[in-house]
Image (cartoon, rainbow, N blue to C red; front, side, top):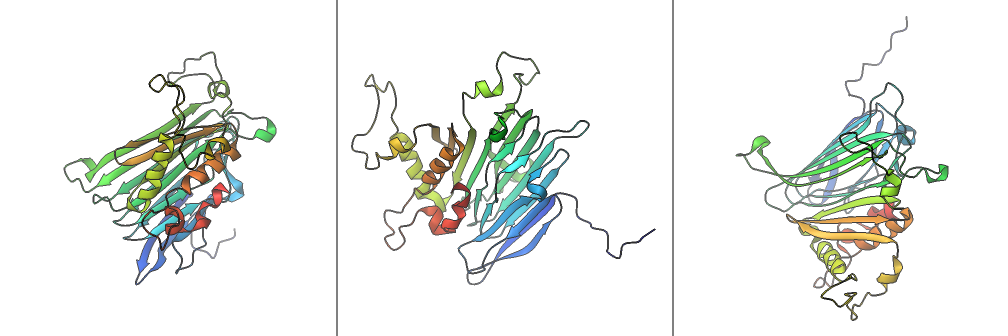
Length: 334
């Protein structure tokens, strides 16, 4: 019998921990940075850069049944963290006797901190079962900022897959801390959920006449964008204004409601197969985007996130995200 010279690992499989801090005067650093298979984290940051940048990966390029990812992220005061991926998160089919694939992320944001979460889409393969829960705890003083992108694509189109997953669920919970009178000392501000059943059954298991692909009407992806905080006020306002200027049918009996004086009217013809909406929900700007082609959705989302130039800051007129995180933070949308 061979005895290993290495101490047994105390890490739970799939567990990760990121603790980001700020050293005077403006140096971002990682005081803790841990991960265990099948989770992999790569930091590509420079201490003097605009932000910390970390890539979230999985060994082998995807997640199989029984894989459980649990990532905890802590942002100290004034820290800026950008979380990216290096490709879509592939979810393989559920094998007989196995359990679902699951990912959980919890992010604690201190006052004046900022989070940019811009992954590539989750790509659930045929017969896969996937569950994702992301929780964001915000300070009560409303000084923390975040942009969260959560999206899913139809599967392996090269193999003819179109929403052939078995089940997919994704939930984003955003809490406000500092409420000692409430359970767990926090108040739920926003909960956004997406649940997809690959067959034509409902939550009770009753089968219907349509497949998921037919219900989605030819859409190749579904995405959610959540924006909040003082660092992204220009971005939020620009997106809401852009949506307000979109053409509408039946506005006061006048047919298409389009502002003929709109300066960026050329955008109307750039994205012909995009369905989207935007609204303010309890201080968040919530954006929903769907498209018939995944690359069309990428281009549209990138175009949206490059909105928000300051009208008063002539010294730095860059869009909010570029000013705060740099243009490289949008690489998943290239």
